Image (cartoon, rainbow, N blue to C red):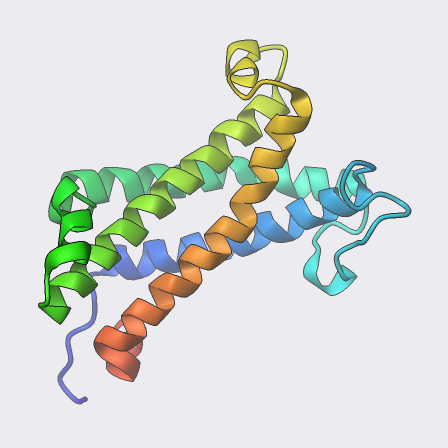
Length: 189
């Protein structure tokens, strides 16, 4: 629709940065997965090379650790902006009650949207914390210890990828239901 205002620049920039960082982090993480004897390894199922980044274990690790700071910066920016400027967009206790009791479709969609955004922040924080615990287990022994065993830590870290994929798909579907192409166009330049 002509005349539809674009989202604020910070929203568009952070959505794009988040998408790029998460795709690159996932690709390099899947390269590490392929080389890990516990997951893909040499005899286990592997991820197709077209979905990985780095070419081999060390290459995947270099990309993954190199992007970690950018990932933390984008996550921190989202958290500060959503917590500071958009408090009403994060989930509140009443959102679960709204889902169960409200017959107002708009209120239900808003509650789902806030729950999805809030879950995204939690899953991304889990990815960052578990990744830091694996990156520096001797320095961050207390953080590694929170996850129990090393294998549990790696499983939690790896589980954040499919969880984020599901949340991003849910976010995309919600955006589509609310605004369709009009909303997607408003995210462009």
